[in-house]
Length: 403
Ligand SMILES: Cc1ncc(COP(=O)(O)O)c(C=O)c1O
Image (cartoon, helix red, strand yellow):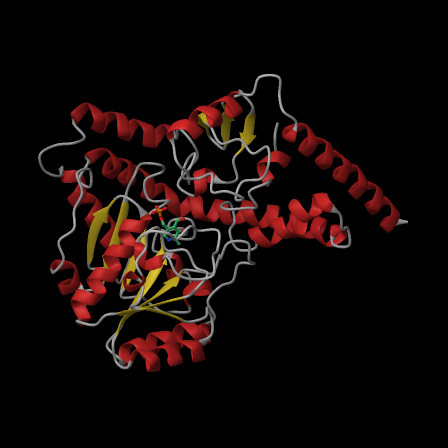
């Protein structure tokens, strides 16, 4: 009886999802998103950098006009609950009043000045006193800057060349990362020699790391590991203790650096860094970490942090950018970071609730097979949620949550 009721409930939800999806996919009488896509096609070679072909589901809106709290509004004035968090940065929600005030105050004082403002020093002090093992900070703008800078620093520190990376893990758009299984990334324009010094290992597979070290014949500068595995379209996976502790030892034995790519999850899991949480890091500290998305609640900022040992690596590279010293993102980060400790706990609580609900629903849906669920599978959505709490989710979900 209970089962029958559950099936009826599922059928109703299923019908509801299907009709919402069909409605969203229908051309609207005047679709501003569509009109903008047509204009963009003439002047933007890739439409926009986000609309990687085949990545966004049909009907997914690309252009948005505003955001408030957890909601975004598209150009057709339709509002969504934004589980994408703008692909990560909007940790405290859109237009957070405390962060906004800090941004406005700094704008009034000045943003692009001839040198950095005191905010840069204050932020470096805040980060190094929050992250127990970090001794220094090197600021840039994007996650890609941070991961590539970390490579240069590791090479500068060790005097070695080879970088080990897992094939499906995304570390940004620098040429060196254009390698691996993620076929949806277009790789033309990258020279084979630019990625010749990269050797792959498999996530959570210590043997493959040892084999990669053997193959590099003493020339490994660093291994880069995503704070947890979130390869596109795959179930997410935490580092195992055996893997992470094993990698730490191999790096120490071979004078190679351990880089944690924490671009995505730092500040979501903990302001001390994802691996500072025993469940994720198993007591292992990296030599270098790359932080970005959650640090300044939407303002462009990334940072490479490192321990005292490899400080020389950071001192011996020269990399800068016209806007790397802008004061506003630093002011924004100074306002954001103190809020992230409580935010991370709340995020985990709400994420767990949502995940458990999806899990329960997904289990009852598992047997359904049809075209719709091949595209938008609740089970897949659940899988994407597994360790992400409030962050990334199947790209299709905003359809389901249109309000
Ligand atoms: C783990 C990880 N590293 C690096 C990057 C690249 O960051 P960005 O897009 O800011 O250059 C991303 C972006 O999604 C990421 O998730």
